[in-house]
Image (cartoon, rainbow, N blue to C red; front, side, top):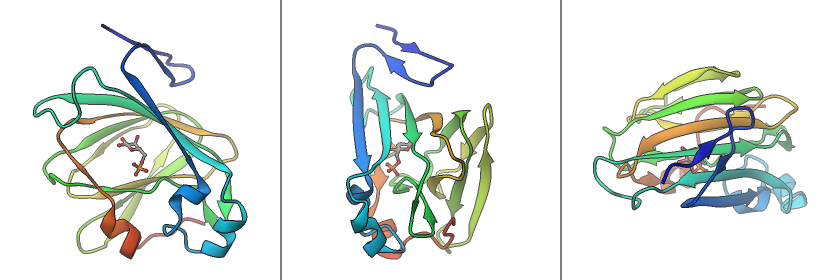
Amino acid sequence: MPIFTDLASGLLRGEQVAETRRTVGDLAGYWADETAAQACADELLYTTQTWFPIEDGTEGAVLWGNTTLMPGRVGEERFMTRGHWHVKRDRGELVVTVSGKGLLVLMDEDRNATSEELTPGSTHWIDGRYAHRTVNTGDEPLVFLCAWPADCGHEYDAILSDGFSMKVT
Ligand SMILES: O=P(O)(O)OC[C@H]1O[C@H](O)[C@H](O)[C@@H](O)[C@@H]1O
């Protein structure tokens, strides 16, 4: 069954679309200023939609989804996603910005970090050897679409313990 991707809003409609909602408090441990994070713990940070036409983890399959990242700051730090590594480092990801303004932060295993600007229409290849996180640097929601291999695996532990070497303020 096909679904509908609204290219104006970036939102997905259809069956087998799963949604998540994360608040500032859900990212406890990821922020530079945890005291500031506690003060706005209930604030909406980002939502995601993922289309699972096939089971997560299926080798050779591709998944499709979006993220809507709100504008704002925790202390000095801009609102961001957790960021993660792909467990299988040879699995990359594509990102297309729908609306808003932000940065795609990329970090290699030696903690060398770079960033790419997210602007409407900008299209990004994430090499699977890089941890990746998105940051909203504007004052409206940052919306982007992503496609990634269903069997890439998501690894968060190292980000939670060591963070990214680049903080965006
Ligand atoms: O999972 P996070 O690092 O918090 O990022 C939120 C989401 O961002 C993008 O949409 C990725 O493709 C998803 O795999 C990820 O779940």
